[in-house]
Amino acid sequence: MVLFPQRIDENIAENDPVRIVSSIVDHLDMSSVNKLYNGMGRCPYHPRMMLKVIIYAYMNNIYSCRRIEQLLLRDIHFIWLAGYEKPDFITINRFRNRLKDEINNIFTQLVLVLADKGFVSLDVEYVDGTKIESKANKYTFVWRKTVERNRARLIEKVKALLAQVDDCIAQDNARQDETLEVTPSLLAEISDKVNASLSDPQLDKEEKKKRRKIAKELKERSGKLGEYDRHLENLGDRNSYSKTDKDATFMHLKEDAMNEGLTKPGYNLQIATENQFITNFALFPNPTDTLTYIPFMESFRERYGHFASTEVADSGYGSEENYEFMELNGTAAYVKYNRFHIEHRPQYVPDP
Image (tube, rainbow, N blue to C red; front, top):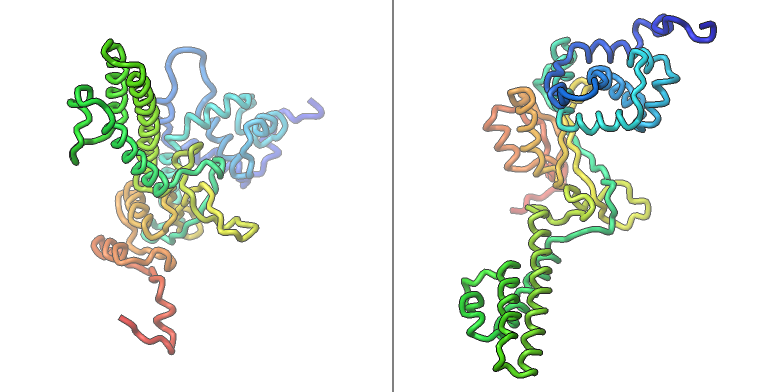
């Protein structure tokens, strides 16, 4: 009792950030977070207390669950926030994972608190983006052009194989016409029929060997075709993705120490600010800022129920589609296009 005070809050200043975090979280609507818990079983740590600890740790650039666990035993700010509770690092990590789908709602509530206090108006967006690297392996890339080229070659090989299949086996499946859609299931079915035909006693040894080889190749081609189709499904409208992080797209990042122009798996993080407060954020797999602007503005409307009346952004967002979208929604656009400064030079000559 001599070494440790009975009331640790006496050593925490009235204007300390930890008190601000505690006060704000106490006024948040946590009903959606509470629904994530099962009513049965052992009584859990209170989610409001856990959220306070997580937010305050992130404010101090502490992201390790083990480190947070240690601070809950050593730091009076964390001890005061947790009310002397001592969740271990596994519990902290589980809560953080459980909160992933609700963090957007919590962020929106915090911004609305700022708007209610008059710090932001939610009428103007200052938008910029940055690319952040994924934790995926940089050598696990899948490129659309390569997949489409290899798939087209595979289809040609498959059609050549189907031409060798006996007509009596392939008459229902392998008609050589333009409407034939080659699918993995179709190839697997034809392969099974070719294997079934090997029991015909009229076939000689050479013919059986030939058909067995065709059936094996069709089975292999079926698996490879299924793999290419899965790649195209994961790609969607993107040009690349990482096998170990299917949401990440390969793009050029600023962190290129050797200046070799290498692409790495990453995300395009778009951020909107006002009065130095972040009011909106969104992650996109598209490396081009121009194509992310309209969906980013729509995400702002989903959060707050309206578009910002003023948009401010650099020339990376300037395009005819974006200008037209802002004009239709009554938004004043302070957004340059990429040739703005070139066209305003004295020596510039218009060239249609």
